[in-house]
Length: 191
Image (cartoon, rainbow, N blue to C red; front, side, top):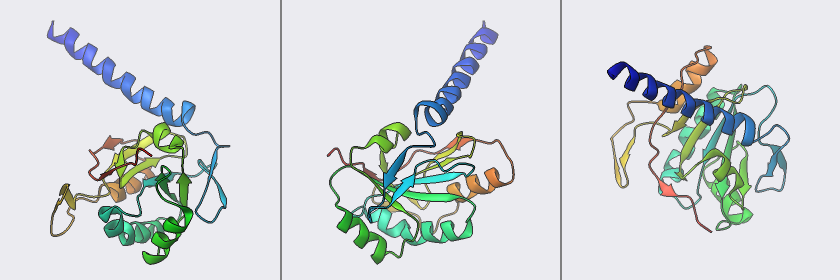
């Protein structure tokens, strides 16, 4: 009986991973889909032959403001990875997003997702939330940028686990390791 239970649980976990991979590679974004950034420039959501970090951001979220320099440094450290910031919902205008990018010196594209298609397709719920998708369309990481934030309104003096950086390093080294953490942050706007 215990062996049967283990087999059923294992099968369930494997089907969950398969479903996640299909959401990203199949019914999620396709290579031809695109969004516009706050300047009106169109960007392919899934560039061919390149891994992507999707960062769900909000210009008014204190965590997104605090993490902006960390994310910018990470984007510069990993030029072989495409970084996209995504602002979902209709709450923020292009001008507000442009001001956020300028104030925090963000140079990677920040895309506008007014109808929340990207958030829905990638199942993002909070800002900041990070996803690492390999060039094969497989999700390698989802969740926190690091462990600096321990809860809403609480944080460590310094991050000790650099989750997103570690996931990128694993991917670049050829590892198939996939994992997730529970993101903590501001809810993505319902408007």
